Length: 346
Image 1 (cartoon, rainbow, N blue to C red):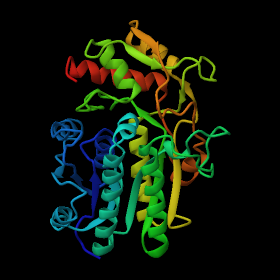
Image 2: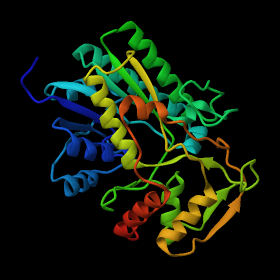
Image 3: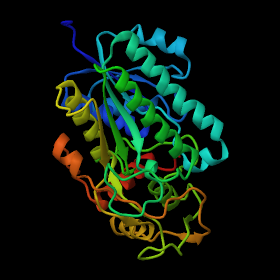
Image 4: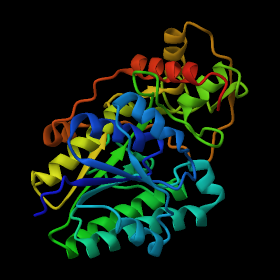
């Protein structure tokens, strides 16, 4: 075993969840952290924000993970890599419906390349960014890790289903390899300092940044996609969870595999609060913490949307010792602080 400090590699480290996970890794562990991000949907300023919060500068390797040769060269510069946290994927449900081949290529090729390199370099600890979208429209709530998959509602969700299968089958053939699949429900909010949050190059696809950008006049009034669903107020129900709570789960998951605490070589955990929130309830929470009225309208249903979903998170609590700390108001307030910090920037 090398005497060098171990390195954790975070793909998509300049992205929304990746950057918050780097912050938690820097604050909670002594690992060296290296990011791999080609800024296809992020920017290099993220590392300035991480440094402003943690006081530490993270090295980023600007590489397209779908380019195996370039990725191998990049990994060759990393000393003592012991784990990978893989975020780098395209994630917009609507875009995946319109550009399925782009999503299948990027989301699956990147994972396969990372596994090829993991095998070559004997990197044995792998955390995979999955999604509650793998469940599709379910018959029974809350969702447990054993809930059977329904048909994927979008190509994006399908890439996560396939990605999980790839990992599960790879681990079966490589008993020394350990993987944790984290199925996020709906990450929202920003670092509680207001100094780092969601920053997409394009129009946001997630509800909360659309709310905050609409509130400051960057975007037109928010459209609620459907108010005639079979839910308590007609709008879709999601399990919103603070991004820093999601990030904390990744730190715990990495420690879980490195410390050999797994019962099996592949572990799967839901990451959610366990509470379903409607779109209208999210809007009401924002109006409360921001002390202003949001201008919004109701539109048609959106293709690919699941009607309602929320998690049973007991397994993550038991196995990882993870417990989400932030409620809906904290999520909305942190997102609002981040938007005010950005001002009129997109």
